[in-house]
Image (tube, rainbow over all chains, first blue to last red; front, side, top):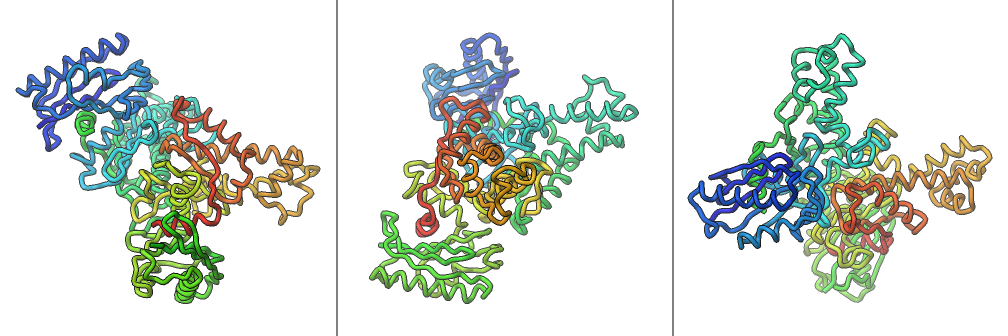
Length: 310
Length: 310
């Protein structure tokens, strides 16, 4: 039997048919065009599911279930997307709508939860039962796996790991609070930190970039080329990431922490200083009980694979 | 059948015989006198167990198991107290030593974990599956219950909730890091904040207290009597507590957060402003999904009851 995984993002609808080994055997995608409203987006999701099944030479009778990963807050129990700003979806009962159409069970979770689950099934966390995935992108997302299952808390509202404090009354955060980890450790925050550094260091390589060219990758590239202002930004940025990871180690003591999102492509450039910081700052210094910290492996496939396994 | 619960603290060994309804039917205690070394303390634990059984008119044959709650870091799987500074115990295989003596299974966990478990079985958290207990005392401790069971993470090293950041590079913490929640929200921190306020407000009621008389209770009493400096200290202290609880709501979304430790006797004086702060600062403002925040109920019995249920 097969399962269908849907990774619904603000930009794309990505659907895959997944086999029992968590391999994507067929995939199909479409633009989300969220401004159209939920009804039309869901109609496109349905068409994309049918196309991916057709491509695989399968029918719904070959599938056990459908899973959906979405951004924002989902109530997995009720199958409702409670609040997803970049879909402009509020209280959309997406599971019921798809069940009515396809007649097989439909499950729902947050996209970061799906990605975390996928890594335990087919990625960097295979064989681990207690894992935390942190995604460093526009924001800082989180997925918590406890005893092999997604832990999302009451009404699936948990794992908002980006919205824990790094600095009380610090930088403003998109959530309305000040000082959240996301406001220091997201790729967006890195760009802001680099812009600040460019202003303060007018002869640096950073300052030669136009402000719209200051992306996360550009800052890492400038640091790799030896620009000392960029190096200082990256060093401090790694400390921000690591300070939040230290909190996760102290609070949850997972066996493994995975970093996802575009920033994790920097590999050892961030992993080495992050591991050193966490080891020297975590409670009791964790002799023999230090969680591994590594990069996620599945990239964009994680959403489909995790959703299919819900 | 019965179970034996041992609450081993830096000052006292408290032992209770507990029935299947989680009631303590007999109890006995002794001074820990930790400076004697683990061997003598364990001998006293054994005598105290025997006395409490004798008092209850029971024998070991009436008991299923023994549980021990200790401060510090315990490896529950191995039954070893890894590091407990106020017992001066390091790598003490207490479960094996008691099993050799009594011939029934012996389980071990951290005291805050035991207290959290006890509250779910016989206290303020009965009927809840996902609960976090935060103890506000000399330090800030934590116990996490997920799906009705203690979650302590790898080598039981998790739930060190006091050692998550409130303020990067802030106040020094006992753990060696700076800016931990414990350094702002413990009773110890409250006393430090009150001392600072007394210095800055020489005509306040706080400033009339001798520094050794500035306890947590004295600060609350001065605030209740209308001293504005003390009121400001308490208001800010409640914000520190609430800021850390907001992080717990965002990360774990438990159904219920319980506050334990001496400070929680202040009841609504702290609970009302804390609930208001968390509701207005948590992610998405949690319409309909706001965890309850309440005081723990079992007080000093929590340790015995929770240990007995390990």
